[in-house]
Image 1 (cartoon, rainbow, N blue to C red):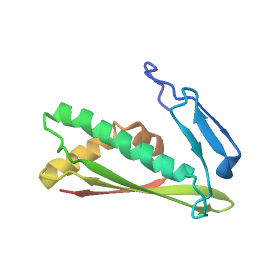
Image 2: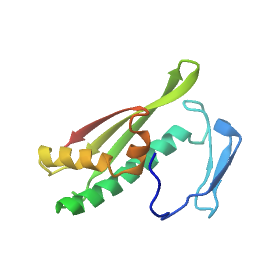
Image 3: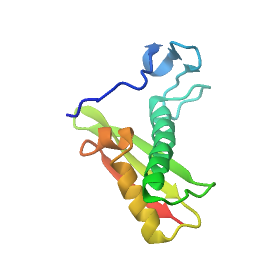
Amino acid sequence: MSKLDKVLYTAKTHAAGGREGVARSSDGRLDIKFSRPGAAGEGTNPEQLFAAGWSACFIGAMTVVAGRMKIALPPDTAVDAEVDLGPVGEAFGIAARLTVSLPGLDRETAERLVETAHGVCPYSRATHGNIDVTTAVTV
């Protein structure tokens, strides 16, 4: 397990009611309702939040890596994340797929960028070796 050299930010939330409850951040910028995956309702679910957070964070990691590689990220860079929820024996687990769109980059550079970003992105690092993750790159 790695330890942080320095804390840059701490997200603080409070949740109640589980998958049919609510969550709110300490600064009030996040205030959401939950509903079970696939159920009727206006709420989101933890898997959608995880997918959204990971894809946004992954773009940030690619921005850092692109700077180190001295290349420009295409302005229409995007990540589509899919997070699956399912049983693992008597427990539950998740699996994920990231489809990274880097239009205009050559395939070799795009694939190197994505591979290196996996080593930088905290979501990718946290899940490495813990869940099944596949990536696809489109250019």
